[in-house]
Image (cartoon, rainbow over the protein chains, first blue to last red):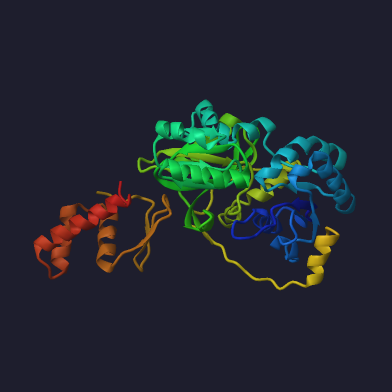
Length: 349
Length: 79
């Protein structure tokens, strides 16, 4: 039986030391059993490695930064779509999701580009700043946290939650502070890079465990694989990890997906305490950079997501291999200046 | 004391805890003790076995076995 061929556009081609999920998503798509793909890379900068990985990415287009606005973004997609006829789009950055959620209906109805994304309400509610309330509402333990707009607010919050505490950027970055001075230093650094507000969160002792999964929007978990990082870079990114056998963690995940009717991919970050309690510290509304591990464990969640959008039948995964590891590596490509010139000047390669 | 059911130990003494993702290396005698625990042998039975199989005094076995079992407990390898 011949397989359908989909044209899938993917962002997050920055396979660097703090990698975007794009390349992992593309590898999973290339290994999909139910369809073939033509991959359209979408890049923000000319040195994103994925642009030059021609065995994985068929063609790349530069797209405008999120702050250029939705109309500019739509017009760029109108142009790209006129050339490529995109079936499905994978946004892979937190910072671009707001625009894509807002444009979801227009992209589908006017250009025929499908996406599977959380609703705007889900996206806002799970935001770091609102996560404590979100957890309370859905019966999931979340460390206490407060939004902070200036360093003057830090001492009073520190009095409330004690030290150490965690200072977090609204999109990325988290640093542990052991004193008010240190917390203020982290605040200044993080707010300079990621803007305001900055989040100050109670520190929970334990080991971090993560779950990569997808929700169908009706409360059903279509796939979920728990992982623990085995090696962490100085940027806090996993360089190696292993899939876990953790029934309780899967139960917490299913409970969350059921309660929130989560739609689309997610990464849940938990702190597991010595008493085996799970504290939810973050919900990322997209696939993580380690999502290729799910393929290795027998759950091609990325393939499922495309099938879900294309109206194909998607059966929930019920098993996965425990003890599968991923280990990242870096790799130097040699690239002709001509290619760099082309993506930099014409915005296509 | 029982070793957790999902703990896997290979012939080379490599031990993997799939609940935490931690892995350990144990020497041959540690491997034997874990195997005996998996067979649900009591601490007394394990001690008797070691005294029978190896040239060692009772006090040393008692102390070392106690240390080893405590370590397994601390690493959450037991239930």
